[in-house]
Image (tube, rainbow, N blue to C red; front, side):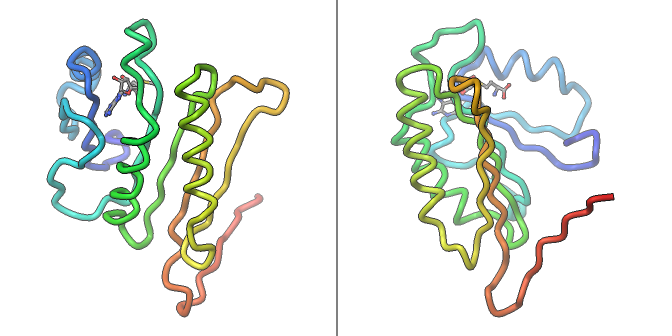
Amino acid sequence: MSELGAQVVALDIQERAIQSTQQRVEGRNVTLHCMSHVTFPPLTAPPRLIVYNLGYLPGGDKHRTTLTQTTLLSLQEAERILAVDGAISITCYSGHEEGEKEERAVLQWAKELSSSQWLVSHHSWLNRPHSPSLLWLRRSGSPDKGQYVYFDLT
Ligand SMILES: C[S@@+](CC[C@H](N)C(=O)[O-])C[C@H]1O[C@@H](n2cnc3c(N)ncnc32)[C@H](O)[C@@H]1O
């Protein structure tokens, strides 16, 4: 995203994840924060894209995983601060106990979002039940403005 010119603010609760990311984004417009996603760091403008990569750090401690309760609190905050034309992407990992519970809760939260304000889709691999699934939520604007979704099929 930073290569495309976006200002990126990223966070992880583990210093180890921050350090390895720091090396990869050196010199780019990326600000890293070592903190829980239960709150957001100060932002200069409403974000247009909020990306969640839930679960635990590959090769790290599997117990330091995102948790259903705090993820839901974070999503509620994301819903509040997202730009009016913004989107949220959430990658869920149901291959472990907490991840399965978390995915169920996140899907339930997403299902209950107002259909006049949000477009919500969920992609999962039907013949690979424990593969990561992707939720894509697009704020569709004020219902009285008559917004359209445009699919470019060329
Ligand atoms: C699947 S890994 C993603 C790693 C890296 N952020 C990325 O996207 O490549 C999930 C990450 O969530 C982090 N995490 C766990 N609980 C968290 C929390 N409450 N707030 C922020 N990050 C958390 C873990 O430390 C782990 O690095």
